[in-house]
Every structure is written in C-alpha cells, then in structure tokens.
Image 1 (cartoon, one colour):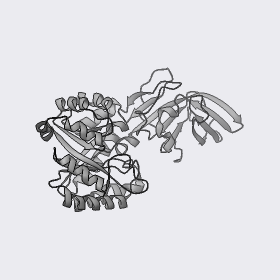
Image 2 (cartoon, helix red, strand yellow):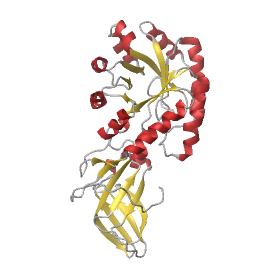
Image 3 (cartoon, helix red, strand yellow):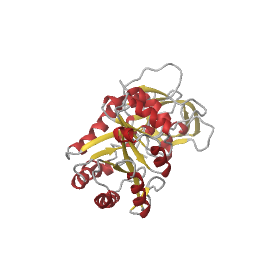
Image 4 (cartoon, one colour):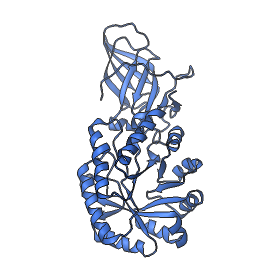
Length: 372
C-alpha cells in the first residue's frame, strides 16, 4: 500500500445526502492513450488501439475513448449494445460468446470486424456466412498461446502444435486468415514471453500464412503510472515489434493501461468508533464490492480531515459499509485529528475492473462524476 497523503483535490458538486461517487479524470485517460499510441507510432508502426470495454464501461469513459479516435474491443452482446451508439467504423470481437446473431448485427453497423477465432465453434459460426461478405467485412485472426507457466491457455491454440496447423488449414479452406492474436494474461508483462512468442509467430508465418495483415498483441499491460514497467512498455516492446514486424498493423486491446489511475472513489465517513486513546475505527459509504481491484491491492487511500486544526496523531482502520468482516479497506492510517462523520476518504486508482464488476450490495453502485 502506498503512503497516505493529505492533499487538496478539485471540488465536485454533490448533494447533502452522503453517497460515494466514482470520479473520472478524463484528462488522465487522454494522457494514457496518447502515451501508449506515441510509443508505437514513434517506431513508425501502424498502431491501432481498441480499448477493452470490459475493463470499465462507464459511459463517460467510453465517450473519451471515442473522442480520442480509438476503437473498441468487445466480448459480448452487452458490450456491443453499450458502444454501438458511438457508430464505430471497426471493432475487435473476441471471447467464447460469439454468435451469428451478434456478428450479423455488428456487420450492419460497422465497416470491419477483426474477429479472432479462439475455439472450434467460432469456425462453425463463420461457415454460416456468405463468403463474399466474409472476405469484404471480416478480418479473421486466430488466437494462439504460449505453453509457459503463468500464461493463460484457456483460449486459442498452442503454438507450435499440430492442432494449430490443422486449424489453419481448416480456416484457410473457406476464408483468408488475416491476423494472429495472443494475450498472455492480466499483468503478466514479461519481455521474454514476447520475444519467445514473436519468434514462434515469425517462423509460423513463413511456413503457413502468406500476406498476414495484423498482429493483435492483446491487453494485460500494467497501468500507465506503473513506473516499474515504463521502459519495457513504452520503449523496449515497441522497438522489438518494429524490428520483427515492421510492416504489420499492430492492434492493442489495452484497458487497465488506459483507465487504472484515471478513476477514484470519493467517499465519506458514516460512522466512528473509538478503540482506545489513539485508535479509531471508521466506516465509509462504499464497500469492497464497488471496487473489485481491492483484491489486487493496487489502490491507495487519501484521508482528508474536516478541519485544519492539528492534534496528536491518531491511527484509524477504515471499513466499508457492508456487513462483511473482510470489508476492511485500509488499516494503520495515520491522521492528525480525531476522525469525524463526514470526513472525506478518496480511494485512488480503481479504474480497472471496478465499475464494470461492481455490485449493488448494502448500498447502490456509486454514480459517476467527472473532474471539471
């Protein structure tokens, strides 16, 4: 957990009723998009960002993605219904929930679908479409995975393997294979994995696929403010891709990298209990079911005292408003006055997989506000 800081934030208009809010910083989203795009464009790569809608599908987030000229990556009809109002020219379709109905609806409203096959049923679905339509509007990729510890193997086909060779032959019988897709796993950012899979892909292309158009490097990139991986994400990886695949369209399905540090929860203390002379327990008007990244421990807490009058240090434990014993948001928080109902507690860095996975539990999912 990062150190606690007492700082001022931009004020947000709110009703007198105590209620937690998601606070979205649109400028941070824009900066993260620009940072990622420029890292690849500076290497003269044809880089395309298709934001992973499942990461955070608050309408305010999706609106910024559209304003910045990015595409969307979806895995369900739910997500398609959320983004089709933005009239995307193209999108990436992944996941086990593809259907002929969903694909047909998307085809009516977009110019191009980058559809990545990750199971045998996807092949069966594509066979139901007219070949002329397939060739015109669908760019088919095949998802692969590296047989290595920590790398997800639920989706796609192992590279290299006879099974992958057979699937390539089966697909190529009725449609052109345009791309290759992979995704290691969330936060599994290891340059050695990239080097290994690029080597396999390069060899595979030379043997099996002619005229490959795109390489989809998936998502899983750490947050834009994760300093540990700054050099790898924004320098070494783009450089490696530019060296091996300089002519391919590069697609990224970044989500966490774009929104992780751009969303906070603004909450208020709703109850206080003194444990001893200098220790207190407080509860706030949100709970861990409102920010699922709680379980990753990637957030940090800012406690804002109600007055500027300094007193002796007090240690507080912060709980959510639920009835669960595990709903402990932070402990060992030091403040310099006794806590009071109404004190503001900001939970920073909850943009990834919080709003999209939040549940109504004890209190409603927080509403969304925008930094002015």
